[in-house]
Amino acid sequence: MNYHVMTLFPEMIEQVMGTSIMGRATEKGLITLNTVNIRDFSENKHNRVDDYPYGGGAGMVMAAGPVYRTWKHVMEGIKARNPEGTKEKAPRVIYLTPQGKVFNQKMAEEFAKEEDLVFLCGHYEGIDERALELCVTDFVSIGDYVLTGGELPVCVMMDAISRLVPGVLNNEDSAEFESLQDNLLEYPQYTRPVSFMDKEVPDVLLSGHHANIEKWRREQSIIRTYKNRPDLLPDAVLSKKEKQFLDKLIQSEGKNEE
Ligand code: 6GU
Image (cartoon, rainbow, N blue to C red; front, side, top):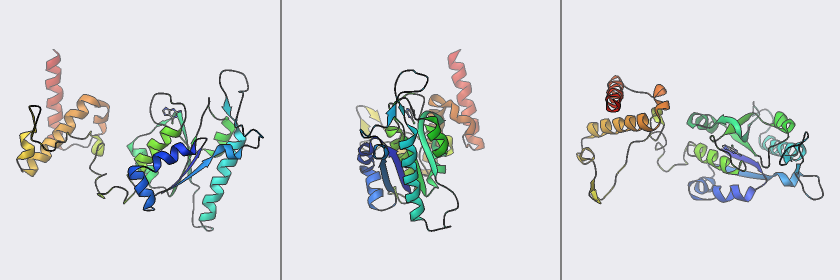
């Protein structure tokens, strides 16, 4: 996976991506990170990249020129690395914006299949629409709140995508079994000691009975999803018995409210 990040704050991206699992994956060559400073493509003598919005209004707008030239530079770099004809389709260019489609695990899985991903981080009140029309293929948000720029969101996205790249996680298949598999939340985990502040580890986990443990964990996942994220349940992958368990849960909760 080769990431290319167009930003006014490359050090911010490099700092995050140099740490922990991302740092190790980069050292191992499983992912590469190419940050490009949009300010380097300003043709202004003061290196300015923003300007007043046409039509007036608060704040500044990132000008089309520097963004477009940065994008050109990144695309040429990708082309130079891929000899003629070895790459059928142009890489996806993702603009981080609260106006985009909200990022989720399914999108992470789709993006993880790409060889190159180009990210564009905006600042100020936004980017001149013409640059977006010329360069961007995907508009992505990380949730319904407003941040000051795309740098934190791009780090969130790269983290979620990288852990799906084969070899990035220690245990090759540990990503598969985690949260949001089957559209269910993760079950509760315990480790030693058995008793902590008078709170005990559930007996079933000490029983050594693997089928019972698996059943208990699936039920805990269903309970959590029902309580915290009922919106996920219509797409949850459940066995017939698990569907019955959920129906009972819904019925008993309904009774409790009476
Ligand atoms: Cl991608 N950018 C900004 N500036 N704010 C956000 C966001 C992105 N996603 C949620 N809030």
